[in-house]
Length: 494
Image (tube, rainbow, N blue to C red; front, side, top):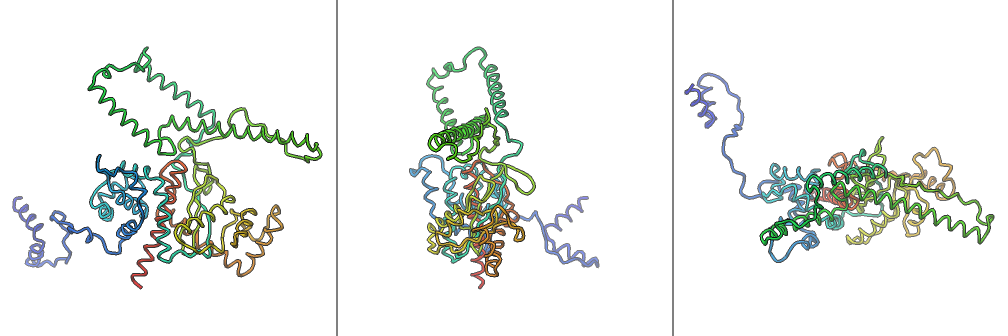
């Protein structure tokens, strides 16, 4: 037994001894490379030797170096006091690279900072914990959203932004909420009452017959006051962090928010009905019933709010995605023929017909800020964007909108016949118009396919419209970074 152990140790320390021993015994050995995991090894001391020169991590590091990050640094103290924080440039680079490779979970990013060589290079062998990563994303919500424009400027500098022909489209992204969390006004009121009952019972368990707001004994002592002030400061910091979120984290606060919004919508509907009644009565007095024609009868609103709202994310709306309805946001994008995203916005409307002109306007603003003087000439969109008013507005601004008037070329819609509808059908029926409209499919649809399928991004990680917009613009910015990286690799090998 001892001999076997000695032989095993000798074999593990000297693989060549095993080969000689087998040759001496007349046994032919396989010629394999040794994979001894007990052999101590050191990684190269220089981080630049850990990854190939053309690796995506190096490209993201260099791209972030080119950006103006004053908005990130301005929220930190400049006097050197306080606990040291991670460098915002490193944290932003980490976040951008993680989104590029489809890793958006703060815990997943923390894990890869320990296990993935590329993440370790970006962090210089540091390992920010998931809470730090999550807080950074919340703290710099607006600055992260504005990152999109600067990345678009990098793409423009590389000659990738050609906007003669642009396409607009939208896709539903699931909200960070379950459809089972959708509640009516009555259900929310019941939950608020039940929550209040639980709070009363808990306070009675703690305070008994006392009010609960009596001055604690330890506040009469100087050492007790200092401890209480520290605790109060910690609670205040937490509350401030929560207020930075557009949606409260505490469930009872979200219930109150949902309750208030349903009441506000209901009051708006009732006020609109009263305004219409006043308008109708004034018209009858001035012009008589004949002069008013046949105005629609006023709608009597329900005595209580009749709508529903999601208690996990009150900003999300129930939208059709595939064959089912889910709480979601409608992510809009405008792209070029090179599949560069030149505008990225969020809407809570499940349909697209009101988004054509706003998205083209957003694209013009983004292009101007990125230093692109060229203006869009042709705008492509599918049938969901058909709107006579938006199409006429784009024409007045010197653009040629080519929007499918319906989902099929064989069945014209009777409700749209005449005017722009017939004209657009004739344009798309021509060889030139049909060829131009066919570009839309490969200009914008692959962008959403690459984001959802290749990068596995189909749901937002944060709640609230502002948070979803910030994340969607970061997703679009990293899409452009990946396009720019591929372009740089192609230029290097050309």
